[in-house]
Image (cartoon, rainbow, N blue to C red):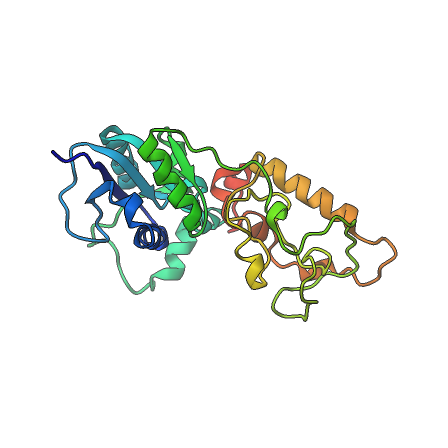
Length: 289
């Protein structure tokens, strides 16, 4: 008798990075993952979609009407439904497309000389959405890609039948560059285009780092390779509230006597602050074109 928990990986619109992160975690922890059996994953093999499954893991976001139908079907088939990755949890980077008029995007992609009338094109919904817009999620594991340690914790909790609660602290709590000293911003710098001081807080260097409002759980992996946090783990508070708090906090750090604050160096502030979460924010209805 097979006592393994059945597992299905249901992909929507994404890049397969979450599936690769899942398989990476699986590869280094056989003892844990041997308690599960993958019975459906289009990325791995041409499985027939199961009638029911113990654990359904959804990756990617909702972009087409057919995605909604798939999601509702998978929700009914799964005893436990998991949203894996920033796209499933918040809409992810593709959610930035919501700032654009979809017809203008289609016109940019396809040559006006090419007619799409003779093709059975998938029907787009108006905006990219997270899966929580359509179904109840039992467990959400954010990240782009999701951290290996959180994926392992997820399966430990699934095996025990326990809920997994994400940390309620910010990335700054595990950041190796964080100090207890008051931070002062005397300049604004564009990351990767201007030199920065090694082993110094990015914010103090004038580089916008979203660590103060981003949920921890990633072990500050980006900062440890000298890259500022971009918020892929989602925010500690309501998305728009977190952005307001961040801007307020940064403005209070600016040295009023400094003459080097060039706000124009901050390119695409909306894209920076809502890189992974715009599809789940109140800015979702604003269009640029």
